[in-house]
Image (cartoon, rainbow, N blue to C red; front, side):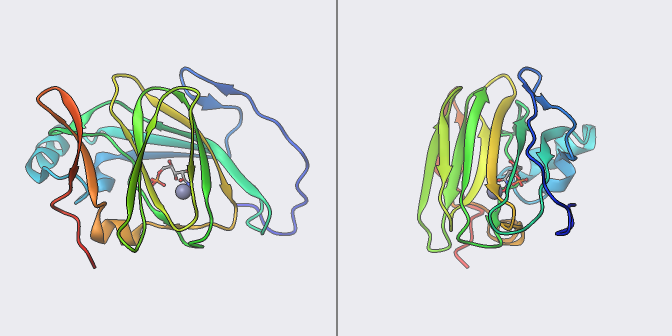
Length: 196
Ligand code: PAN
Ligand code: ZN
């Protein structure tokens, strides 16, 4: 993490897609199935899959900057293809701790959805295809979901002060889920969603 005394100089970095890497990331996060307990609808399928292997579901590469107003964190999010039962691989999803901070995503490869919702119960899903940008306004929780057969790769940019609130989604889940039903991708009400 950057301390506030660090003076930030302009910089650039190369993005390589595929495979979905950036030069000299400050952080490389691995999220495996075991870190997503309770998030997938089909709990039995989740347990069975985890018994076989703690599969890598998604990765994040970050370029860090001082966490002060005005600075922007950027990086790549890579959601691997796969399903737990009929539900597609996805990120944990979160609200920003500073609720009013937004985020821009730019899809570089793959096919998916950005699932979003507010504390007030509104929800929205935007389709992710290569060269499409999705804007997540402040106040909206967001989760990316890979509905394709290849890695879903997105560049993201968000305010360095945003912070992450994972707890709310871990407790309540998302209102809608994206599953494969008889070979078709559908968005359905999530029975695990809690209103409070
Ligand atoms: C992204 C996400 C990234 C992984 O950088 O952190 O896609 O998703 P989770 O953080 O939900 O595990 C972002 O939205 N940052 O704010
Ligand atoms: Zn975010």
